[in-house]
Length: 241
Image 1 (cartoon, rainbow, N blue to C red):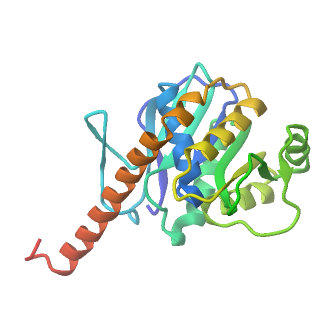
Image 2 (cartoon, helix red, strand yellow):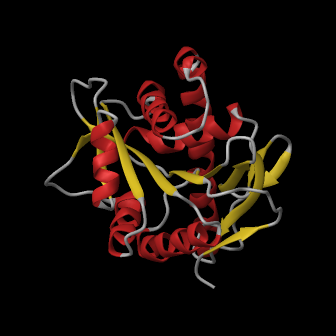
């Protein structure tokens, strides 16, 4: 087993959408996905497991949980996937394929990948990449500027490329940012997903409490980074923890 999405609770969903947010530019995806899970009081239904992930458990609401989690909301007909650590590059392809297989099993109607694009003078413009012609037209209809030429990287980029090859409906929504953690930009992509789908969520709280939310995300990620470094030291010198 290299990477697998494990479910421990079933939910009743009908052609839901998936929103995925993994660490990247401005941490926009992680901030947005975490906010959706918290704000919509989504149910923790599973996690992403791999023997190549760092051997770390996060603590959330007094419980040890995987740093890479899966949430669902029957009311919103929504699944959210996110990670509090950077997925190792050598399993990005496998995880992308696993997400698509999971989406097919759940009869998902659309995957939205949320991410950032660096700009020293960010605007409120949202850029998009679509996996099919129909998705590209949908982006245009909702005033998302499709990217005609360029490159995209990380899990969101590879996932979208794989969706394109399989003609599975997916869109990468990118907000401009010049920050390491950008709650404002995260709110922009959430608003755009809400506009393009049936989910209902307000982002005023995310903007107002942006500094607090940024600090919480940063603390969680830094803890995982430090724990991983300490674990590696322990592996190298097991007698000297």
